[in-house]
Image (cartoon, rainbow, N blue to C red):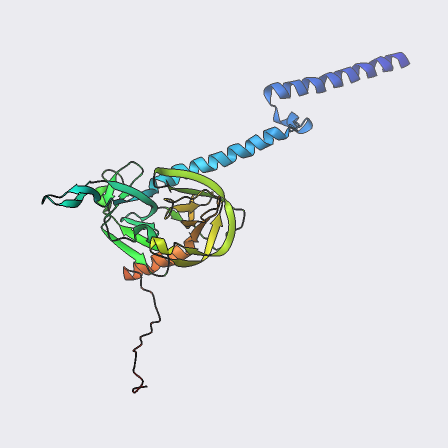
Amino acid sequence: MKIRRWLIGIAFAVVLIGSLLGGAIADRLFGIKPIDALFPAREPSLRVGTVEQKVLKEESVVIDVAEKVSPSVVTISRESPPKRSLGFSPFGCFGFTEEEIDETQDIGTGFVISATGLIVTNKHVVSEATSYRVVTKDDKELTVEKIYRDPANDLAILKINPSAVSGQALTPVELGDSSNLKVGQFVIAIGTALGEFRHTVTTGVISGLGRGIVAGTPFEGFVERLDDVIQTDAAINPGNSGGPLLNSAGQVIAVNVAVAAGAENIGFAIPINIVRDSIKNFEETVMFSRPFLGVRYQIINEETA
């Protein structure tokens, strides 16, 4: 009797172990959910796989933002001045002659803020009294009809004719919020680097907030004090001026404005909330209306004094 019970116990144990092993094998082959609860799959412990997953996620963010925003980013060009050469003039005199050549030079970047043809850029990009053009991502050149310059900030709004973009509507960018930015936040810059490489995409982080800088030099014809600007290590070069600085959602959080000379990856951008106030002021007045305090004086002689 005891031997019989012993044999039954061994047989029951064999059946139980066989069922468990068979269930585990069936779960791995066919993915049976009730069995998954009993035999949860162990996560791989290799750190390399985790790192690759993070890299792929970051790459996807940059690719998505570049594809979304690039059609709204434009290159600002100006007509080249006549070239002067030393030789005989049409009147037979030896001296300088001017040769008219219809060429344009890329000098900066901008981005579309309205489907009606309004584009934001830096004031110093369009500071000269000359003709400017806007070049879209698909290389269509549009003449800038009007320029509105903000006297308080290094900002300007360009007006183009949207109907000149045949078969394609202008796509405005989405403006973000620069009031809650954090140091270390991931950012993306798009612009015409060095006035040569259009739609260059660079990445970095916010390196500092609330910076005060002096932009320009007396040799360039202007010097301007800019306060409360954003510092970033995203590669910003001459030609990126006026281009957008974006967050991971593809929203413009700042306008690239300056780069520190003699340094590496120290660029600055105007927070988009300042730009938003300028745009609001422009929409209300169709110009930039700013209050100012002026002082007039008159030199008087000793007798009058």
